Length: 242
Image 1 (cartoon, rainbow, N blue to C red):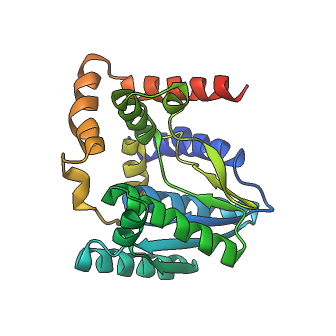
Image 2 (cartoon, one colour; image 1 turned 90 degrees about the vertical axis):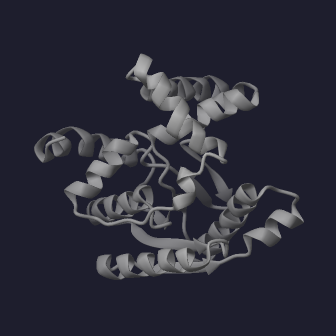
Image 3 (tube, helix red, strand yellow; image 1 turned 135 degrees about the horizontal axis):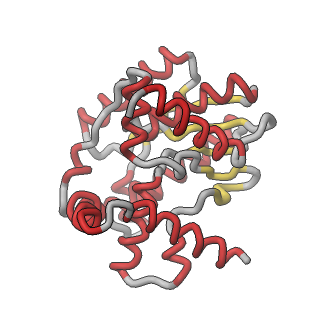
């Protein structure tokens, strides 16, 4: 996508979408893993913050699961935030211990530990919003995952655009309006580096199989399948909220 076309079509959509989630009065904490989605989100919100004048900081959670790779991710996030002039909070957690305590899979244990850390840092810093980098493709994948697992209608509503994290703090997802390809294009346009978690390519995780095998297969029959699934999830969410 040419830069002119990207700036004329995608950026305005991102700005309009974000304006419904974040206001001038907010203190926004960005969950920063170092991956493409979170780097795009942090950079974009810094751009918006200069216009809307809201407070912005980032939080990186080290789950203690990937050794040197995790240490490299943490170092990357620290360097990025230094370059951007954004305060970064780093929180180390023991995801294995959390998984054992609550009888969860390693993946779900890491997720629970991560959100616990987010809540702690949000309270410490005084955040009103926690911004996470889920995008439209994540929404489509979640819809299919929940459908495969067997779910009630609420599960087909997918990833919520916003929901409470704790007292006075709301999770928001400003990138749900754009695709993974558009996230990657944003990074190219702004010459932004990111890190890649190699576990994202392991088909032992069902989400990776949905992402790498099932969605491309469906897309070969219906090129707009990701957008269709995300829209369907949004319509179900709207019906449930009525």
